Amino acid sequence: MILAILDHHHGAIQSASLEMLTAARGLAETLGIELEAVAIGEGAEACVETAVSYGASTVHLIEHDQLDRYAPEAWARSVAQLSEDSSPEAILGVGTERGNEVMAHLAAVMDAPLAANCMEITPGDETYFVTRVRWGGSLLEEANLSGDPKLLTVAAHVLSAAPADSPPAANTSIFSPELDEKAFRVRVKELVKPETDKVSLTDAKIIIGGGRGVGSSEGFEPLEELAALTGGAIGCSRAVTNHGWRPHADQIGQTGGRVAPDLYIACGISGAIQHMAGCKGSKVILAINTDPDASILGKANYAVIGDLHEVIPAISEALRNS
Amino acid sequence: MDVLVCIKRVPAPGSKIILTDDELMINTKNLGFAISPHEECAVEEAVQIKETHGGETTVLTLGADVSIEQLRGALAMGIDNAVLLETDGQDWEPIPTANAILKSIADQKENGRIFDAYLFGNESADSGGYQVGVRIAHALDIPCVTGIKSIELADGKAIAKREAIGGGWEIYEVDLPAVFTVKEGINLPRYPSLPGRMRAKKKPIETSTPEVVGGGLEKVRLKSPVEQGSDVEILGHGTEAAEKVAELIREMGLFS
Ligand SMILES: Cc1cc2nc3c(=O)[nH]c(=O)nc-3n(C[C@H](O)[C@H](O)[C@H](O)COP(=O)(O)OP(=O)(O)OC[C@H]3O[C@@H](n4cnc5c(N)ncnc54)[C@H](O)[C@@H]3O)c2cc1C
Ligand SMILES: Nc1ncnc2c1ncn2[C@@H]1O[C@H](COP(=O)(O)O)[C@@H](O)[C@H]1O
Image (cartoon, rainbow over all chains, first blue to last red; front, side, top):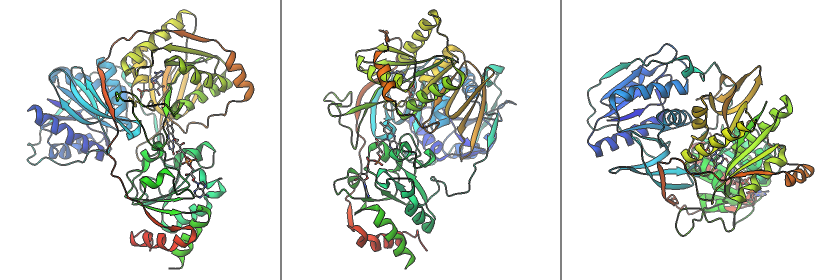
């Protein structure tokens, strides 16, 4: 049996979970064994229907009165206990912050290796041959994964999700783990709501990204004007946050946010792989750069060669005049 | 408040990654080296904790002798001690890395160095295993909060903040000692001062040679992802291109 740990937000399954379920089903089919899923935390029941439609023959719901709030170690210990009886062949998690965290705890509890952020999984006799994502997606690693069970997470937003052609009949099973106080030593104590109502980078359809070429925090004013005109959001490169011109929340890239807008306008950004790791999901990339040889041009769909301080206000002007 | 912070030397590629002929490493011929921005912030946080609460800070890395460059960088920022677990420069897997760091923690304890907080990066820049810090917390049987963007310490406890799914913050409270994995944005790392750099040059590096213990994730080769090469269309030069950009924005339905 392959066991898939779902990542969900109050019962809403994240798209990365669906991608993982699709990969897990593929693995189960290759091995000719069942796919089962496990959901933990508040709203877990709401995941059942979707998990079944993606091919899970049984969905385990973990019940415990302290598991209403996220507690990574308790999640992992619950899965470890669940798999004591059922001995899964492999346990797959989602390559999200939580998914990777829970799997790291599980790997530590089971004292087994863990391959994080896999995009290809080929089972062999003793080991699995996996391709995993490194450098935030800029490099891939092929590796042999040992362990019983095999532990891995599936990279988010790399594979596509597809429901099962002929889903099994829904079957849920309640599991009540025995967890001591220690398992809850790390547990969300309080949730603080987001402070602002500005367009978030993940929701924005258009993002105006500024890099070192913007030159100063005031230099972002024309970018903000264009963002306001188009209902977009401002992003930036690490060069910008390092200078303190913008808050880190605006940073796009390997150690910042991942964005996928319809249009990403990269102004004064050179196109380092660590920046592109965060914006290559954009449908269209437009670069504005003084340097016709900047590497971002090789990664963009459109480009304007010129000084962003002149070009950006001119774009706003052209939009206003239309 | 005594703090250990673990960092990893990695190459800093620019616009593309070139591999060695055996496809096992990045070709670093024309590259500089760095540590993950997350780890740079962990170093800064350790120094700030010391400045607020007193105590001693130690930086540790497992890597080739050239990693001394990154240890000195941390010393220059204000870290007190540096530990090098010297390897031949091969890429170590997460389990042996964690085991070697644990052995060093035990050795340092023997010498009277006991830590209240262990800081890691949320993930290493090159390998992104998302696990070394968590494994160490389990082995030490202490709490671990990952991905933190703020931390406050008082009365043997820590309050740490991490970004919640869908925005906002998750607040955690844990007893010390504890492991924290840090994300960039928790602070803005300082630029080392000249006297700081001079002091760092003279500090001893506590060096030992660890053994590979454990494994199970064996690298076969590295490869570059297939990029859909895009042919860039130059819309024009300077302000004369503005009308075309505006047209593109309108065509995409992004301005009405
Ligand atoms: C482990 C690691 C993680 C990293 N994570 C991130 C990350 O998450 N996000 C990130 O962004 N970076 C990240 N970096 C840093 C990254 O490698 C680059 O250093 C950074 O992205 C460069 O930012 P930039 O393009 O703004 O600056 P530069 O590379 O200096 O480029 C500036 C560009 O602006 C152009 N320009 C200058 N003036 C003008 C003007 N007036 N008009 C138009 N164009 C102009 C120049 O031609 C140049 O192309 C990371 C690095 C490492 C090692
Ligand atoms: N070779 C190493 N030396 C010191 N610390 C390391 C090393 N590898 C990983 N770490 C630490 O563990 C964190 C997580 O690494 P990883 O599990 O590879 O994502 C890193 O951000 C570092 O803080």
